[in-house]
Image (tube, rainbow, N blue to C red):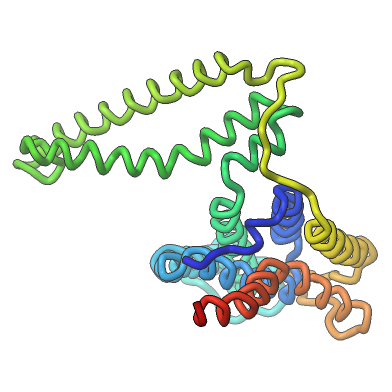
Length: 297
């Protein structure tokens, strides 16, 4: 895992970037946009999580992409280019195959971006952004984001404790293993409920959500954040305007047709690449500056 320079920007910059990128990734079906977003999401997730991201992609994401791409032609038979006929007599069309690939790429891309969000948008950033506007929502988001890692850590603690007394889920016969697993699950559910109640009581005792309550914050919006936000908004505005005016037009049915090599379309593709690559470029530039300094230290 590398030190993420983009995560050091103001939470507003981080949130705006991910809202725009995830939103565009969910709605743009142009192959150039899909490929650009997928590559940038994969590169950024690998930068953030290292080998774990590569392993997760190969073990889970790639099989899910293949399965999604193969399932769509089995149920979607639209399109005019017939490749062959399935055993049931339905046609297998080129358009349905390519649409299945596009849908699979979109699904994997969005999941990859959310893995990046989970690494960059910490609980304190959500509380900072939404604490005054929607205190209950920000508290729920903060608790939800930190629930999974805390649950995993506590599960390991409980499993190790149960293993010491011979009650781990791997001990005994099948019935005993099931009983031990249910006991561990029961302990975990009890712990999670008690933890949620303690957190709610603690926040209530501190006056969280009351009018006029102030909170300490280490975030300051400086020139660097302003420049990054202007770049993100400028690229997003150009891409959104291009999509609204048909610059990203692409269809899969009944025939494949779309905008590709016009100067306007190329400018939109470049802006979309610049938008998706913002954290990658920031981190690359930061590494070029600091790694030589760290090697001399």
